[in-house]
Image 1 (tube, rainbow, N blue to C red):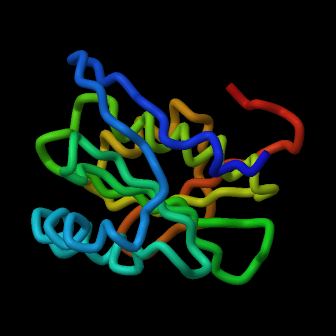
Image 2: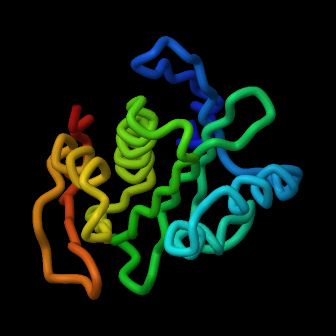
Length: 160
């Protein structure tokens, strides 16, 4: 079974809202454009490469037809390592959507045979840092303008 066959998935936020997680499709481009327009420049740069094809794998969170979050596994060189990139609509922050999306990215990475995840966090992104720490990401080499965290995945372990 392919790791992507497990989608779509439903997640329940801490306020009871039900959202759908699923891979980005080519038909999502208009909704992704509207999502990007709601982000600030720094967040937008994290998800500029979102598309259905390519080296990165992107999962979106949808509230009906509205894209409200995107998480990506971006491989940049080392085949066993990927960077986790996350962006959330402001209206969905503080509701545990980011934690759900990060947890899903960890599980997906493990299913794909990725052995190590890294995440770069801006200095003011305390909620994102807390979510990564809850998922056992630890400090790694510094990143310009923020922090770099890493998590080693273990083949065959569900991790959570």
